[in-house]
Amino acid sequence: MDDEAVNGRAWARYGQHHLDRGTRLPEVERLDWGFWGTGPGAEVLGDLPGKRVLDIGSGTGRYPAYLALAHGAVVDAVEASPTQHLRATARYSDVPGVSFVRADAVDFLRREAAPVYDIAYSVHAFGYIDPHQLLDALACRVREGGSLVFSVLHTNSSGVGPEVTVAPREEILPLAGGGELTVRMWVLSPLLWEDLLVEAGFLVERITVLRAPERSNPVTCTLIVARRRHS
Image (cartoon, rainbow, N blue to C red; front, side):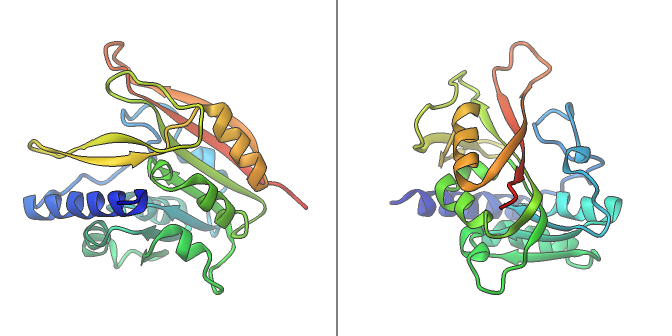
């Protein structure tokens, strides 16, 4: 089974697991690029009121709803998993300024009628998509001078750090209450991410490694802030 199919099946099962459990997450009060409520928030996206924003892998919809309500952004929230999309629309479909789109992100960006965005961002979802395909598609849909901001896994819970070649590896997606799913992720070094971004027409402005507050927790994430290069 190819990487896209493995991840699609895993996230569909993940969303169904939470639908079956009736999981209701609290509303967010900030954008959290890591897992711990520390580090930068929505300010890394720049000015948001009235800006056309793309959320890649929007999951339960909490972040696009927050950006629309608290910051006045106009957000297209794109999510491939039918069950995650259902969780989002069941809770946030009436939020003004957010359009929830169930679609593969690359396919959506390659549509002839797809918009051009001032800002594209992704919290943790970027690493589940082939970066060559995703960055190539984004290069046509982020305006010149527009921002691309995303966070990805850097070191997993077993302490395994990033790869130095552009290839996916198996990672574990834990389920609440027990159990786990296998996914395939591109866990790449910051230097490799930068090379890919530059190749796709973006300039990297900042790379930050976000660490857990507990020294015993090896998990780290990489936050990357880039800008679409002018022709």
